[in-house]
Amino acid sequence: MKISKLRLSEYFVILGLALLIIPINIQAQNPYDIRANYTKKEYTVPMRDGVKLFTQVYTPNDQSREYPVLLFRTPYSIGNYGEDNYRRYLGPNALYASEGFIFVYQDVRGKFQSEGEFIVMKPYRKDKNGSLVTDESSDAYDTVEWALKNIPNHNGRVGQWGVSYPGWQTVMGMIDAHPAMKASSPQASPSDMWIGDDFHHNGAFRLMYTFGWLSNNASVRSGTSTQRSARFDYGTPEGYKFFLDLGPVSNVDEHARMEP
Image (cartoon, rainbow, N blue to C red):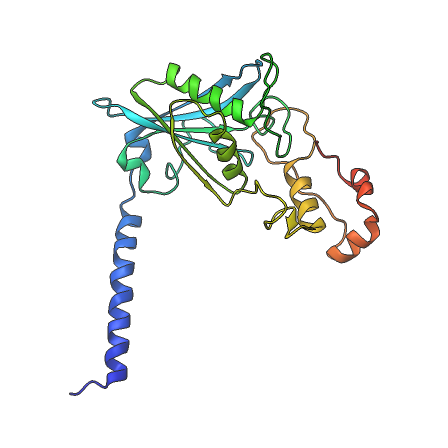
């Protein structure tokens, strides 16, 4: 039986898709067992001003060699709270855990289980005169310093990564970086708020996006928590009507209390 050119091409497309799918299914059926290969601990890590930041550390059970440290800091909750509550995978993707790293996850200052005040895009302070002057750069530095002094079996080399706001945290960690910081991967960082797709788009202020992000991520809190704050109730399914009735931006605080 002859196979037409069209059917033959279809055959190779199907075969190619099958070859792509099979490895994914095998990996999904046999995922790397994080619990069997790593030990999880939780700490409150003191910063130079005394504020303690909630931190989770996953260390390989195999202590026959030393490992580099991978740091991830976020305002969006590191989640999986509790030392017996393990993440599905560690690092940027599921391939990292089997390679062998010490993974450090941290709620940034003022968010979720960490103490202190969260300030959106807190400016970098070059002149840190005294221990009470801090920023995201100093918090990253202090976290790395604590890790090297308190986590065994590291090789003295630290990397960090983050996407979106955690990408900005990564950028801040690159400024006045700890000498042990050897690699950084900031992705989609909103560090340039003027040109990007965050609070501004090519200079145009995005009121709806900005209000939505701030009301959900920067509202005033009463203390540390593992829970996300309740989403802002707009009182209407019509976004246009809400912002039309809002009036000038100066009226925002009457609708949602937000941190600076």
